[in-house]
Length: 104
Image (cartoon, rainbow, N blue to C red; front, side, top):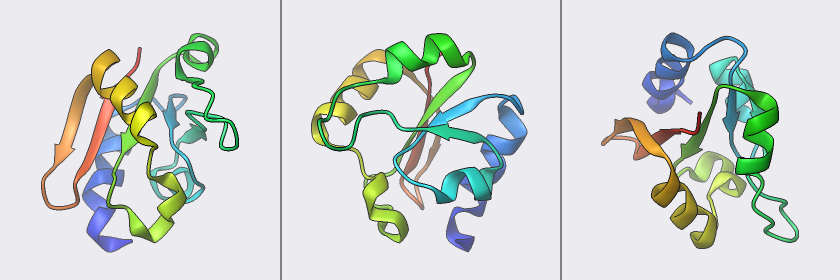
């Protein structure tokens, strides 16, 4: 997990303690100490970010298409395209390839 410590630290230092990070997996909530929610329904691919973010308030999307530690977190292309089109990038780490987008 150590290579991603800067990414987790950025989340802890720059997002509200009650904020949500959209992420397809489990380890982010433990490592970054934030609530996580799935950005899509895994079986159908139904896009959930817009609907859920209204209920959840301050929210972000974790993107790392090379995150093989928890490979289910890699977003499908269609979801990645939506995220990149709709939301503003607020963090990028060239070493780990992690990007974080602000939803609201």
